[in-house]
Image (cartoon, rainbow, N blue to C red; front, side, top):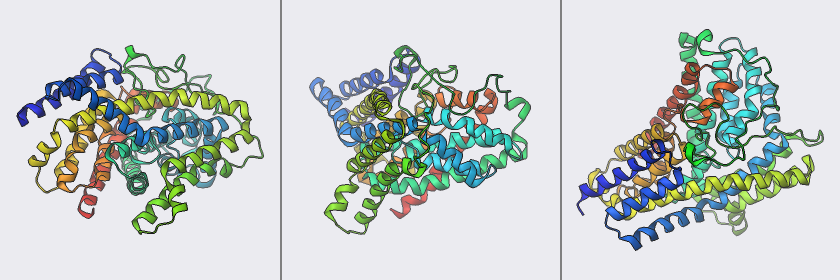
Length: 485
């Protein structure tokens, strides 16, 4: 088969997945498998090889990140059950004050809280963010809504243990410690610059309180009482929801809380459970992973540290530690119930991540990597911009941050060795592109609209434009890294 035919079939497969999800309301997992099958058969892999590639792609990425995603989700639901996140946000307000709160909250969400579902995180933190917004000198709603949107979405795909970052690392074979370090180096300036840019625009008249905000309902409830539920917590294939925990699970036009995960009211912890103790297991796990990455770069080898710093073991330590502390805080029964919920929710994420790996494996098997390797020159700029653009277009069409990032990275992954591109750059570029234009297909959009008291016009500014600015800032910061690695 000619190179042109292979490229056309690859493009058609990706387009078919998008059309099946949006036009025909096919469940994303089913659409991805159908797209993989179409590509394998039209590219000449044959029936047996096509099925084998789909199954192998699913299995390979599950072997890489399956346990990591499950451990991260379980840790997150336990932190939510103990009320640790609500207490953390309140502590940030006390320490930094209301006017510096947007930067503190967005950076905290992006770097330290990515084991929490974004939907859950928004429901817990939004009432407190509104309280801070009311005390700000000017445009408080715009500032806090922007901080929540940028911090939450960036953390999903740029920072471990966000589900998107874990999936990208597994797909591209990036050591998790390396993904953590480079993600941290990227996400801090990206979030800070993007928030500052949006504040600059707001201060120069781009925010109109009368048109961009709406009054809170009379029965607006205080922090901890808001609930977002979706029946039995399972996605409806007819709604083409993308329940990957990235806040992109809603269908266009749905009100807040219509898709995604069931979010229960955060629990109150016992007064003798300090917040640092509640957060210590998760932070310890991230620290172990980071230490392992640093020692690996320094070529320092210690069997004990290497074992503990292995991502699966580190996150297992965090999970067990959070479970022990959680039992002390809210009791064994409640922790057991929330773990059951966590297993249900992680299953949805794992299936989507796995079938995304199936499509990526099929694309690799067709030889697209060799074709792209011949097409591009030794310059790394074009491939990184290309993966960013592909992820951006897919996200605009499909509405899922994680799904668009995985698909874009899978297309470009084979070209990395030929051009000497470090896979971590492809992962970060795909993640950055997938942040572009979070709009009405995203559950995050509708949650922010209702929880932060914005009109649709206002949410387009704080969420759609704000996260898009972060997407552009991220790829601009990634490009110089391609010269250094």
